[in-house]
Every structure is written in structure tokens, then in C-alpha cells.
Length: 121
Image (cartoon, rainbow, N blue to C red; front, side):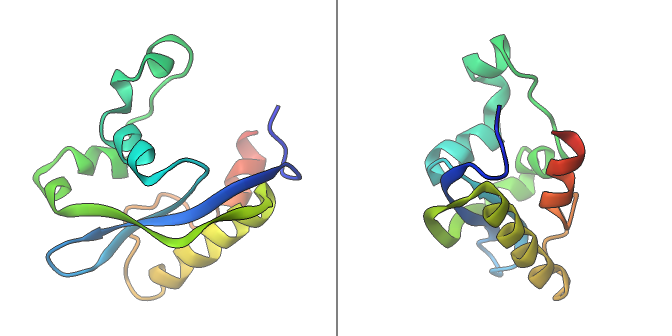
């Protein structure tokens, strides 16, 4: 079972528009950018999701399948480093809210990933 006190190597990524550099989404990951991009764009085709997990079509993931998705690319905002899962989720929340305050990150469904993690785990 995953715990907030677990040590992880994770970073903060964002999807931005290639036509105007606007940040539409930020998240945290313990995976590479290539893997997380594939998971977001077509995760329902991954064997693990077919056999073990339920893939969720979020507002963000659905938009990746629309024409706007062709203009969205992922990049690291904070490169992966070793920290606790709680630190990673706190950093993610801080970085989401930074962009929400600028009118961006409008495809994020929650501004507080740590609070959501505690609620649903």
C-alpha cells in the first residue's frame, strides 16, 4: 500500500500549448515524460489498465483527444528528485496554484492533490 511517507523519485510536469506557451495542466509523476504522455493520451489501451485498473477519462485526458490535444506537449517544470510522496504532492499543489493565479491550469480538476490523495486513499 502506498503511503505519504514513502520515498519516491518524482517531478512536476506540465502540458503547455505549443502555439502560445500557455500552461493548461500540471501534475506530478514518478514515471518518465514519454510513459506518462502515452498513459494520458491512450492509457485505456495499456494491458495493466485493461486487466487491473480502471482508466479514467478526465477533462484533461479527454481534451488530449480533441484537436487542441495536437497543440499540447509535456515538459518537466521540476525535474524528478528523491522526496516523500507527501512532499511531491505538496509541491504539485503549489505549482498548480501558481498557474491558476495566472488564469492557467484550467484543465486541472483539483488545486490540492495532497488533500485529494488523503480523501481517496
